[in-house]
Picture 1 (cartoon, rainbow, N blue to C red):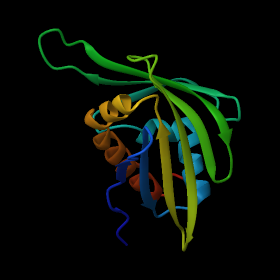
Picture 2 (picture 1 turned 120 degrees about the vertical axis):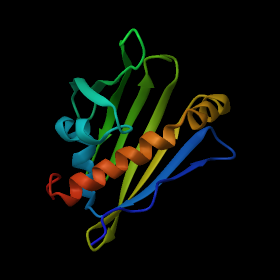
Picture 3 (picture 1 turned 90 degrees about the horizontal axis):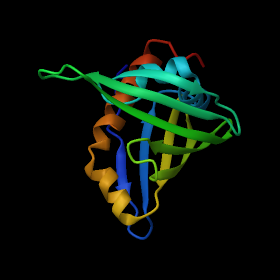
Picture 4 (picture 1 turned 120 degrees about the horizontal axis):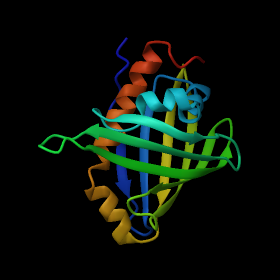
Length: 170
């Protein structure tokens, strides 16, 4: 069975500063919620290839918070690590929905409200519907120009592999 699915569809809403992402997985909604809320699993798939993640705090419950560092060894003479810190709050963690905020600490005023819905398609397949509402069209367009699709698609490919290996138990 081919467990690799198509790339995520990433779209900008023409009327609102929203980014919508849709992606199908060979997994149940419960598996995908677990992959998004279990810190040990999230560490293994979030973000682009070549990044190492480290959890600072992860309290995946209604009203909980999260914060992690993504880093990559830098090339060049100084050999300093390139680090990016992300944080947010879990507003709702349900059986088929997660609502959270998302902030890159490099731009601390740029908070987005994210809603992830997990649609059961039957036969062990689920469609993820993610929506990120940002404060302006300029911010939304900057996110889209940032190369975010690489991190999204690399991360989801890693998640596919974890699911196929049985690491994300149903």
